[in-house]
Every structure is written in structure tokens, then in C-alpha cells.
Length: 255
Image 1 (cartoon, helix red, strand yellow):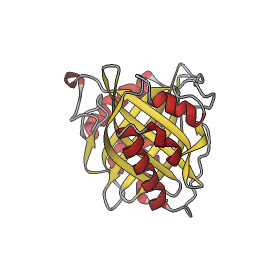
Image 2: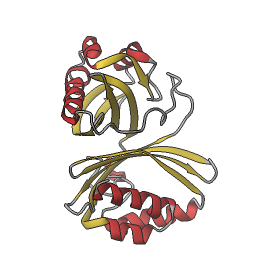
Image 3: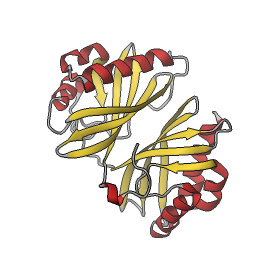
Image 4: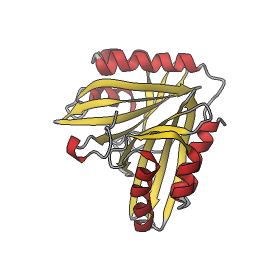
């Protein structure tokens, strides 16, 4: 496990789950901490101004890191959170940029309610977790990049089968099962248009993209997480968040 992974795990599990926010943010961040979670201001003090009241409001915190991987200085982490004995349940996807010592310099995220009611029947955070480090990372990333460009951005939905397995396991809450379910959703108003790919990172057989969609009058920040097997996308998780109005941001914004 790289240093970046260690720092991300520590700030999540000791800082937030363990309630040691101040010590964790100070030892795990670098010379700057640029924040893109729009309710949180930049810097360690911005982190604490949000999380110290959060910890007080939520004395019972069950946080499980479900998937985590790294790509050079980039770290991706997805977690399930249950607060106050299930009073609130959330799925988070986070992306971090780190310095050569693995200290966190920048952070992006989306936060969405966890629900057991998915259109495909697959759990929002379920499915394979283990990364096959022997898999060809470059091939996995290239496949997802072309899928994002040709299918999502260029809207050539008939090409989806070139990149996606017919039996893709769909974990996104609003998307139906299989390739047909995915193509049906992509053509819907709820999917809208995929306007920007901001970042793509991967390790082994896992790849994640972070970008912006526009649907039903809203700009949406979205993480799409993919598991690649036998040369095609075999599983998909999606976590998205409507971007709030500029006046509500506590920093420079989601991107």
C-alpha cells in the first residue's frame, strides 16, 4: 500500500470514524489542502470547521472503506457511512491528489444517500472489491476512456456493446440491469448529457472517472467506477451530486 493510501485511510478511519479530526488532518495533509467538497472551506481549519460540528452531531459513526486504489499521486476511495445507528446512511466517493510523501494536497467528492432500492436489484456498494494488480492498468484505462468519449460524450449508444459486457452488474441506483438497462438509461432525460471528463485514474482492473453531467436543468458532479474483466466493463457503480449554486460554495467548487 502506497503512502497516499495510508494517509487517506487514516484521515477517514481515525479522523472521521475515530473522531480525531484535528490530529488526523494535521498529520495527513501537505503544505496546502485545497478543498472541492463545496460545503467545506480550504485548509486544515476549513476541514475542522466542518467536521468538528459533524462529529458532535453524529456521535455514532460506522464508516467502511469499500474500495480504495491509487494511480501515481492520485488516490480513489469509496466508503459507506451509517450515522447514529442508521439514522442516516451515505455513500461517498472521494478523489485525492497527494505530494511525493503521500500527503493530501487536494480533495474532490460526491455524497449520495444509500438506498437498498436499486432498479437492477444490485446493492449500491456491493460486488467485487479486490483489485487484480496483475491486470493491465493501461488497457483498463484505455477501454474506459474510449467508452466515455464515444458512448457518454458522443452519445453513440449503439456502440456500448463494444465496451460493456451484455451482463454488466449494475450498482447505480437508477440504472436497470445489463447492457440493455444501461443503454435505456443513457438515452433518458435523467442521464442527460455528459459534458466534461475531469479526471480518469485506475489500478489493475478498476478505473474511475470524475466528470460533469447536465440533466433535468441541473449540473451534476459524478463519479463512475468500473470493474473491467475479459476486455469489457463488467460492473459499474455511480455516485453523483447536484452542484449547488455558486453563492453556496465554501471554496472554488466541485472541479
